[in-house]
Image 1 (spheres, rainbow, N blue to C red):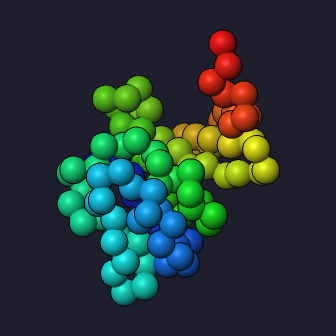
Image 2 (image 1 turned 135 degrees about the vertical axis):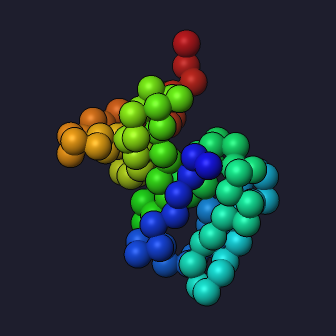
Amino acid sequence: MSIRINKEKCVGCGRCIDACPGNLLELAEGKADIRIPEDCWGCTSCMKYCSQSALEYYLGADLGGRGAVMTIEKEKDIYNWKIHMPGGETKVISVNRKNANQY
């Protein structure tokens, strides 16, 4: 599984559920939950719609992340992808979504 839900941050708005292309998320006890964790594609669509940064993408060794966790925070048109390393270091990749696909 690549996506984890931080239940402490989740407010149960359901935006991530609507965004999931695999229909893998549901509300359980007022919080988002993954129905079948091993079926998660890791596409990060749900993360982009979460206003609370409650969804985390686990970057395991197979992805070169050595156990890091990635979250996303939005500031208007900027997506700040934050990579939280196991040792406590945080790296930030900022992407302007309006021109992200321009070549």
